[in-house]
Length: 308
Image 1 (cartoon, rainbow, N blue to C red):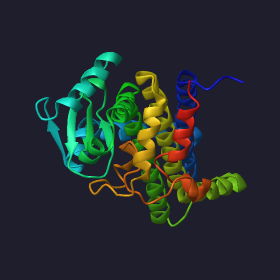
Image 2 (image 1 turned 60 degrees about the horizontal axis):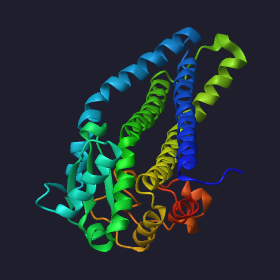
Image 3 (image 1 turned 30 degrees about the horizontal axis):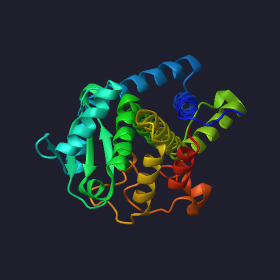
């Protein structure tokens, strides 16, 4: 059995994320294809329509992709700072950026006593990292270094871009389900009857998918989000060579029960730890954890503790 290290944990998490993304993409295509067939299209027509819908959805979301970081920072009430405003934090981000070969991101402060942080931006050249005043006050320098390394890992791993694509796919599934129900309603539930029992089965499957697919898509979205947190932890530990400090930061932040006022369900997945504080970690059980944006704090700490 392989000895757990930051290297093989990071590699394993990349593989798992890739598998989830392939499965998600196949799921979206499958849903669109079944809906098209249920509405009476032949197989070749269904494939063509599915491809067109996906292309249109991607094009429509390009603008939001390019401007999402500005929107998120504004929603979070983050204020950009320069080196003179907080030399210690600025130098810490700058030094780790140089050490990892990552372009220096813009640095923001959120006036909130709840300890947390997040990274945003479509790529390393257009990245930003934001820290609450609470995290600057409550963590030691080494613990804060671990958090900064974690956030820079999100930037280096293109996690923000990946999650933007995932969000588009989740929205597309919900749109397809809504379109199917509307078209079914306007057609009075009619379908091509010349396909016999096979057509009825497809129609039934389509109705079930229309009901369940948005939930399934959201669960896959959350699973990918949790996997990227594990990856950022492992990558951050590789940067600092100090997984214990990152584990210590997680322990402090996980033990802090103050919710982050500016966070909401739409931005919660971006943060270093769940900012809403509306769930406990391992105590909620495996089923409830399926609906969490972050892995349980205890699991993240355990993964860091076994790294060598």
